Image (cartoon, rainbow, N blue to C red; front, side, top):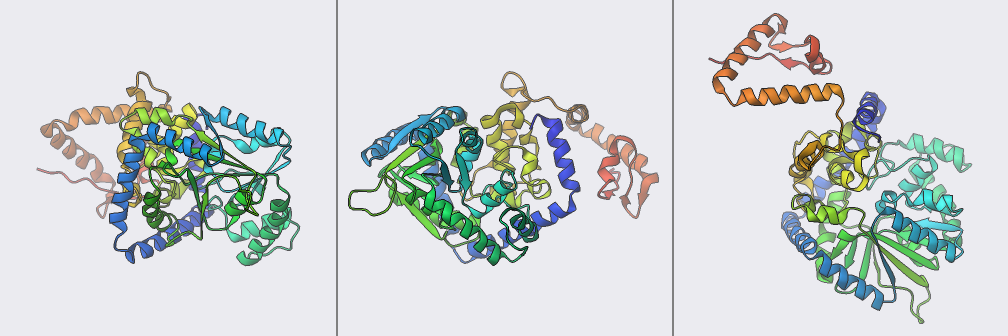
Length: 464
């Protein structure tokens, strides 16, 4: 995303796409219904949220200590560990490793962190074929698109869309039946799994106490990617570390319930290191890449650091009135929705600088977050930073938005004086009277015309 003007253009086009909005409403609505059902039957849900939040607060507060302990334990378990300062370092390490190992095909479990560092284009440029094995990721890869949702990459597509895609790319007869589409993908991916020399996954949690990497999933592709190839690379953001093995259960209780409305994901994988001499499966080598890429800058900010608690469950996207109207691609970066609007300006710089303003600040994201991140507060902080609160703005607003900001600034000054506000309210009521019909204004002139383009405006009343 080049800037605010491009974001607004893409968002306006997405809002006008009624079919896209229908798909998003249907998919996110189902998610929210499932979440509500599983939360209702689990009375301890809020108690577990509080516990999980305390653990994340402790983890981020002791991040340097826990990372040191994690690295020591991983090495003791036989893993090779590197810390990448930025996306370029992470890409170079993984691509260089693949070249040294003679890798031709890489199978990838679902990982938003690999999207963050743009790993697939780097592997392709090196003559190495990356294959996404999560069904949603595989679908968007066939479409040459990026994921449209943190946990549901193909949320913007219907089963008819996927049926046409598979007919064109996999050579099967068109069908919209999910079972047949899944079977076709499974058959195609199975042979790729069996011949891939390297697997790449992310990690949902990394346990400092034991040096254990935890990967939760529903399809088994993450387990296949991490056990069959001879070389495994685990790419994880540095904020994924938690102190103790006993802490994990609290996160497993809330993660699936919030993300997909399940009681528990189908597979919870524990990766300790390469296979032992007496083991028949597992990789010969395990490489762990711990990614910074701006996270230490977030850690240094007393407000932004709370965003590092995020579990990447995607629930805040499902309740966000902005995301549900424009979808993920309008954001122009891998992390979308409320949490993406917070972290993306740090991770991707000026191309994501406008995203903190793509929010209504309604607070629904804060209410559903499994670790109770105060997202609206952090969004306001990011707006302050991007508007110049941090020694100079990194965003140039379109002229229309700049005019609006100036008008709101003037209004804010006036709102501090009750007598002036009463006079203004009376003046507005008089001016609106000719336009009123049954208590509403259905069309307003001039600069106010956009207010009534898609809604009726309640007519102001004079207060004495």
